[in-house]
Image 1: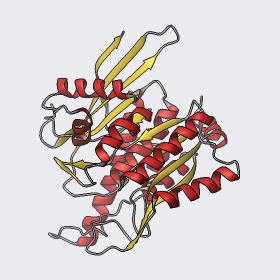
Image 2 (image 1 turned 135 degrees about the horizontal axis):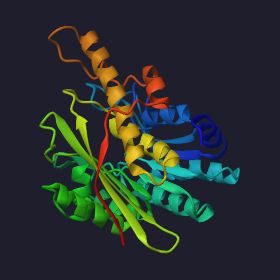
Image 3 (image 1 turned 45 degrees about the horizontal axis):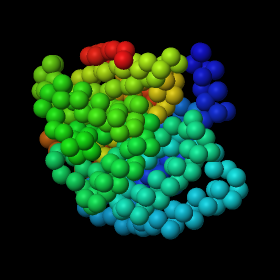
Length: 322
């Protein structure tokens, strides 16, 4: 269908329940996901797992954490009014097991109501070899959350701890993605890895794998690889934006992971380039930007979110029927 009719149909049909963190100032969690999804025509119902003044990369932060019981109360309110009908669920950072297990219960119930519901899970646990959530969340993700997920967006470290396999090569990454498929998700995207890029050390490697079960029962899989230009700064909220945009573009390209990933990664590139240009200008010559200056330039990137110019192309590295 044409672009305009697609967006009109999305507006009529697609409602997302997003359970993530919220900040008053800046862009992380639901603040990173909601606006871009709305720009692309999705209705977004947000449950804020935390409400903080700003993300925790600042010198100071204050706020409140939603408990599992409070999450249940909010969901019960939606349910009592019979408006608990969703096409997508999106989840990100969770900080304790009881909250995460309540999320699992909600997803199971919503999938029971709508078997076609698509669950997009960013299993936020850590990065660069270290966990930044309690370790007892890992078995909950591995045994309860990932089996429910349709689309999974771990980084290299998260994929490794979920599967118990280390990645040293693209071949290892292919094996890890296949192991993750066996756990449940039909689409897996490794959002960032330390694997060497064929384009040099100024690029990081992301990989994706999609498994499609055809009407005759055969399984078609496609694996892709992307070389993403590195930017010398630490951004917060980019993983949340990635998962939200992958949700949107896999909706538009349900059987074409290559196109969905190209548009998702290109949006991130445009947002990051605009952000670093602004941050460097605000910081001044020779000074590194601070956390406030590096907040994603989301509103200013509206046109790029709606109609991204593809500047990162994905290579198909494996394709087969089984």
